[in-house]
Each structure stands twice: as C-alpha cells, then as structure tokens.
Length: 65
Image (cartoon, rainbow, N blue to C red; front, side, top):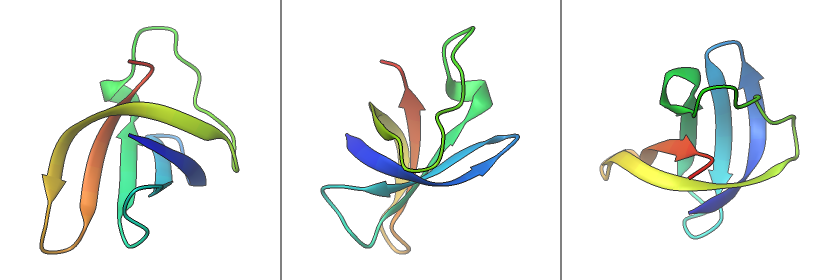
C-alpha cells in the first residue's frame, strides 16, 4: 500500500491511501521497525496493511516493510 502523509503526531502519522481516496491510514510508532523515523508531512510512503475497518475506511499500516 502506498500513500501520502497528511498528519503527524508523536504516536504516528496519518496517511491518505492512494488506492482508496476515502480511506485514512494510521501508521503507529509501535508498528514501525526499530530506528525508523516518522516521515514528514507530504512524504510518500509504502507499507503493509495490518488491519482495516471497511465500514469507516480506516486502515492501520506498518511502514518500512
């Protein structure tokens, strides 16, 4: 899965998912590889979907895969 960082918090980043424009992804710090830095706003990222909720288009993503 690929997307663009649209928000940044100390617990992770929010992403606009390329394949599903209505979906919002969350990549939490706890789901990132050790030593992985949080990407900045506007950064293009890729990762693996580890959870999703179809009813509200929320996706949890593991970056750096």
